[in-house]
Length: 310
Image 1 (cartoon, rainbow, N blue to C red):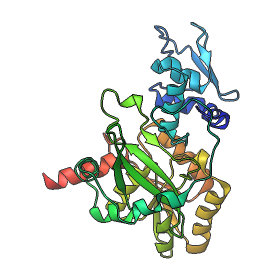
Image 2: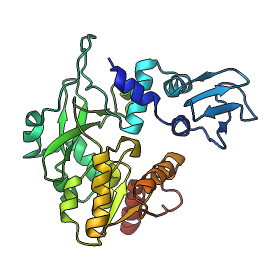
Image 3: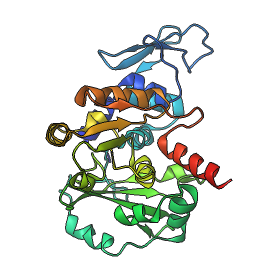
């Protein structure tokens, strides 16, 4: 069961960004309506009320309604899709969990710390990290990635989040079997209660030299690829999730070390929107364009590795 604060957070996601993630092309607050045979951009977005309405077929609603109607999902699945696509933390998924409301608990780091003392990678995790993503093993060790398999036989990659001192503050579980036909029955990501998963790879900040560049990526996968390319990097899944402390930390790097910030935004409207949101926080953030045909930096990295070996 989703708590009210999580649902409210999903409803406050920018409606036009949600529409673009659903494949709609938004221009001047309008797009073709996907709910009828539309040829005149009848779907209108109101950024003030964060809603949509079609003046031809009267389809209307907010962010969750748009996902439900566009993807033919029920309310819980639509919420999970939105959470997965924006890395908003929802309650931990547990098969056959009683439907009773479970109150939010603080993150219990002691319960998970030992998982990362001696990381173990399953064959599925090795295939994902080294064959599909072509990551440098040294990066995987630095990030202390590990894996596990649940009672239903689903394979998970476990990604720890540490603060600048190396203290565990959160973790992300990634479903390595999500591509299977029944994958959507189980979330793509799982987060324990109370986990803090805003800026990823914070320990790298202690290693920055004066005026050294720091690359900002949109997610953990892109961060691993950037690290494997030889650059120091952090990941920020959503500028709207950054706390004031997070923003102050990044701004302080610029003031204290003269750190320069760089970003390869994803090749889509949400990626460019994230860049602009971060640019408002970090005016010196430099934009780098991905090559044509590459959807994100991870894709660019893999393509570059393949080209070098052929």
